[in-house]
Image 1 (cartoon, one colour):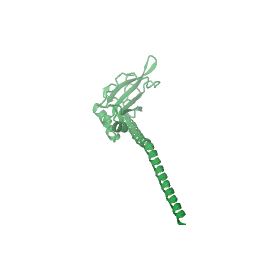
Image 2: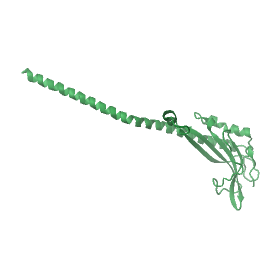
Image 3: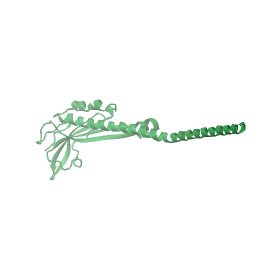
Image 4: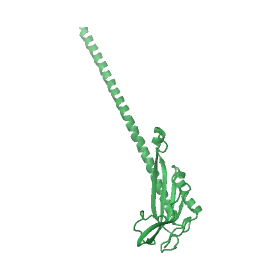
Length: 213
């Protein structure tokens, strides 16, 4: 009478063993699934961090552009030293990004009538030490069409490189292949200034002269 019971017990043990192996097999499948999904999840995480970092850099470049325009607009005649002090705002606004890498151009634009049409021209300029300013006399009508004759305003341009951490540190990209250029340009009104050849005040920058009529 005991043999059938022993036989049943053996069958139960065998079934338990098979169930355990099946469970282990499911664990293996989960491990394979994780191995397949992990790189994608890591890539999404790194991408989200990189995008947030880049957006923060773009936001700070925008702050810097507006700060340069606002501070410069409060002056009248700005010499080279004064211009460099204004550009020094990059060291205060851009961290944790490298403020020294920002290239800043500041131009006073005047609008005059030429052959019956308004022409926007660069009158005076300044730039940070790591870049060249715009050329005095440069025609920027394509950027500022339809401006009122006699108008005066500032044009601020900021450019700085953004180094992509994921590409530069992990993928070891070729030189320059891990960098994006962030550019921001703004037309900025003159808050104070001095009236020269127009009813509108202007800012006279280190290189150039007051805008002509």
